[in-house]
Length: 168
Image (cartoon, rainbow, N blue to C red; front, side, top):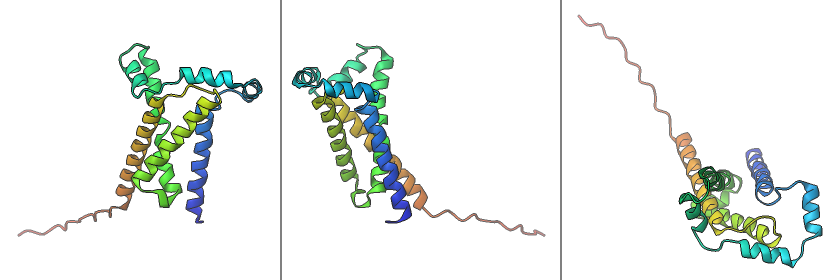
């Protein structure tokens, strides 16, 4: 493994750890330990009944201003922003998965995994809209990466120097 590949993989896995901390393991460690000590199927049922399985329900809720606009911006923007690095880092870390479709599928499956962790362990609320927004964030990130790679691969134009001519 080349040095640049090692750095890319390392940064990607650090990003995944931060993503887990932001989305699933939000509480301090002692509170998490207490949560798991008292976890039982009743918590799963409560999480299941709070979950949103209807696409665009939460997005519509925020966009129709049924909630304070700042909360909507934080929720929608945050879910998009948190997966932008995924769209950039995943293809750099794993070159055989650098195709657009593979990167977006990996982002969707990662988001689905995180949402299922929240549902099963009652560590948050499952929301299908988060899957959509996270995937959109990965699409943005992949687009940013494509623009950066295209700009860096284009040859630089030679600077044309004009000579001064002596006119009679």
